[in-house]
Amino acid sequence: MAYQVTLQPSGHHFSVAVGTTLLEAALDAGINLPYGCKNGACGACKGKVLEGEVDHGSSQDHALPVEDRAAGLALLCCAKARSDLSIEVREISATQGAQIKTLPCRIQQLHLVAEDVMIVKLKLPTNERLQFLAGQYIEFLLADGKRRAFSLANAPHADELLELHVRRVPGGNFSEYVFTTMKEKDIMRIEGPLGSFFLREESDRPIILVAGGTGFAPLKGLVEHALHIDIQRPMKLYWGARDRAGLYMNALAEKWAAENGIAYVPVLSEPDADWSGRTGLVHQAVLADHPDLSTYQTYVCGAPVMCEAARDDFTAAGLPKDEFFADVFSYAPK
Image (cartoon, rainbow, N blue to C red; front, side, top):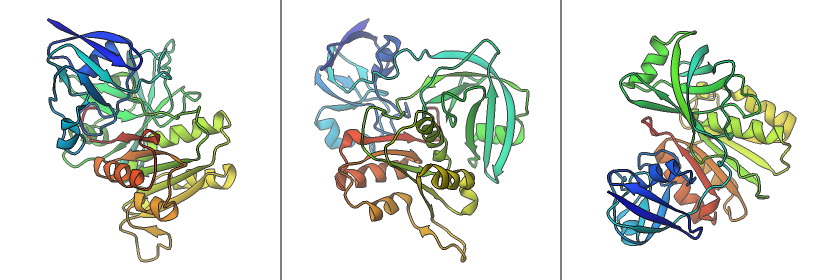
């Protein structure tokens, strides 16, 4: 049995089988909707059910609170149809034409850049290229059927190797594998590109980039892409970490500031006594410098708690909701 779904205001429509999420069915139909974590944690795929009924599935309360559900909102990565539906949602046009592929890859390089951060570079087969937008992610397809998602840290024009930044998560099976067992020349399988986190090139708003830990990875791709296409919009990067070691590519960020005019503000939450820079929570440093965000566009990457706080506080400071873009690292399959 299948239900029919109509999207507003575009009028696009597709069918969804019982038990299949609305996002999955839309993507299968070639319709690109905004999404990030794909597990109900980030809220990027939120849409409004105008007609019909859905099962909210595993939608998490912090991403879809009770008042949102009462207002008819749903997370399309979790919601499943209980009837024919009409849904109001913003569609993404820039990702059309980027074919999602399943490909083998070889572990080309492993580079430990901090005690808990490994840079992994992947080599695709000679006759294959992955067409992607800066900021999107890929998933490793594991032998046990599970998936692990990592953002691409390189820009599309520099795609000879795919670059990932992997943080060691205590108790995380895959990250422990990367740090203790993975070897160069190992063969893996990946799927991608995925996600709707990418640079909105058509805007003329100044850009604020906010990274927490390895949330720097997709922002690195965005910055390198912006420099490659010579975007003239002002850009400012805030990078939050626990200590200096967490700023594992600090020299690169400083180089952007010195050579390309991209303002850079590192923020440490547990600094050493000799740290003279900014301290505290990284998104609060943004607010201290920009109490009025009404004219900006923001890209935020990191742990769910940081992204949620940034979303709430930035919109309270005047940022339009549709100018907030996030890549939420939930350390689970995206």
